[in-house]
Image (tube, rainbow, N blue to C red; front, side, top):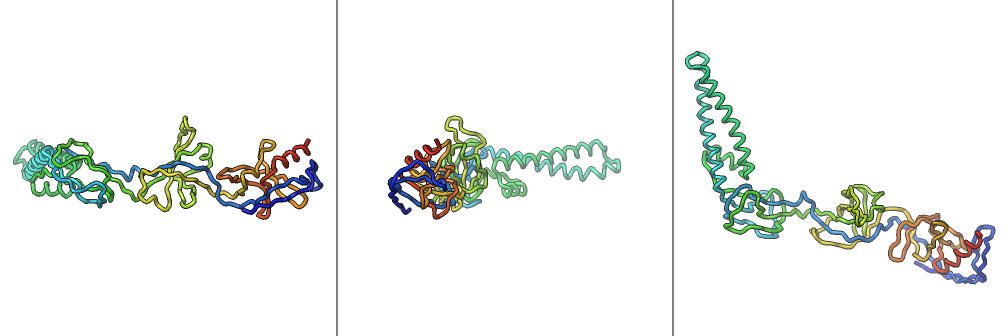
Length: 349
């Protein structure tokens, strides 16, 4: 930014016909106002985190012994990859009960077919046919329930079909990855006994992560999900804003998505200066002075200085970001501004 220095002959407290402040021999430094399209919203310490939908807890579906651990910590796995093998006596009992129900169902299925024509002809009592049919329907419902139960205990559809067709129980349960992910930690050892619900491992999909910050609630009042915020290098999209204001810090939490991706930085913290798109002017901090419950700057003219009211939007690194009636050619006083203010106030009196 270029600076200009003007020596004036005599400081006076009068305005000429053009309402200009005359400044005599006072030496005043000038700087050009810079047009900007982004206004800073402040500097924040934020942290990267992976969304909950990208985190996976691998749990034991049923009591049993760990007989194989097929993965290592921090390794990337694909959907369907085998993670653990669990040998479960309880799963064996459940399958055996399911198979017994299948065999009984098969018997009553044949019995209903056999008795139906005989009951119609009166050869056997209809009560006997009805009892057989009721038992058949009861077993049919029970099979559906036990299928669902076995699947809830971790038996895959293909394993369940195999048990159903072969009438053979398999105590081995293979636990696989539900999605492409990276193993963040393993919490069991070979041969250990686990109970239903115990955590075996945790996985995380690192393809997406969010940047979370806390911003003074007043600054968030004009923001909404979908808006863009900017740092010097990156662009962020607002995913969500907290519906509540922190009563202690008076801030609102904000969830941002970095458009270029966070490069597997989940858990990392970073200081970032955020900007929002807004047409404004940038001037040195020394150019602005408070006056009449607001702020003003002094713009150099051929015959003196013109007082211009401004709206202060933000301050950052020795610069003020303002809205004002300015042009690209305007030069703004950045020294002796208090003397110019006094001249303006004295003239008003």
